[in-house]
Amino acid sequence: MHDCDFMINIGARFDDRITGKIDEFSPKSKKVHIDIDPSSINKNVKVDLPI
Image 1 (cartoon, rainbow, N blue to C red):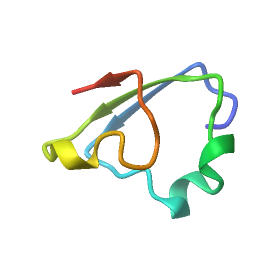
Image 2 (image 1 turned 45 degrees about the vertical axis):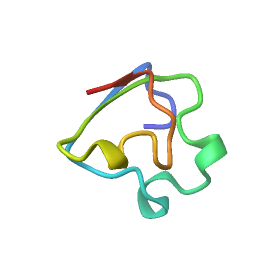
Image 3 (image 1 turned 120 degrees about the vertical axis):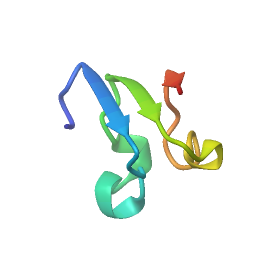
């Protein structure tokens, strides 16, 4: 995931077990986070398109 261009996250969390160092997590990718709980979106990782 580190070198991807586009990441889609559906119903999963971006927690530290997944991301490791947040500031180094897939820095060049565009991220979409789809989640039923709005408080989970942008909680740990800033996304480009929250849904």
